[in-house]
Image (cartoon, rainbow, N blue to C red; front, top):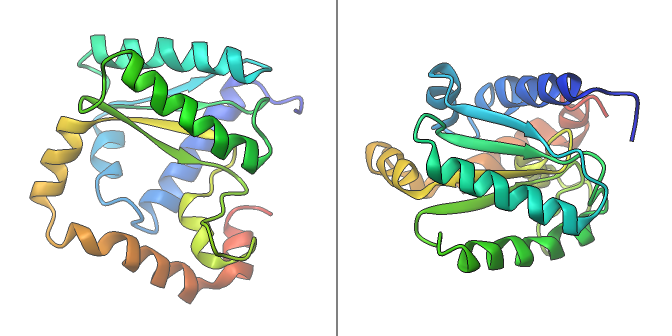
Length: 180
């Protein structure tokens, strides 16, 4: 992709987490995990979706086995740069959760530089709620997520609030924030 190093990918993703996800309060639970150093940033140095699926399996197992990790951001800068292919890969990722008997224990959220919700224009501001510097699979513990949701008032309003916030900021401002 570029001359970036693993450290560069992690630093840029960490900065995105701080400034966009936490700074804009897109995820009201992220700051706690980052502050408590329970976010694992992992870079999959892979070139194919098959290799990525293997890396995902290893990360799922690691998160399942290691309670000190709260959540994992699996960054994969050199594979699935095309959003359509990335989106199709998510079915394989969900199938892996089933195969590993981790449904209800772990879940996978997705972020991509070109994220696009169905029915939206490519540059619609609301798409920025799930945009990241690099294609990224976010592995979450369902128990931790449930605890956070139970403690947060009106959690069902978060998605619509985020869309309103993105629309208020506008695509041009968001592109600037994302360095595009």
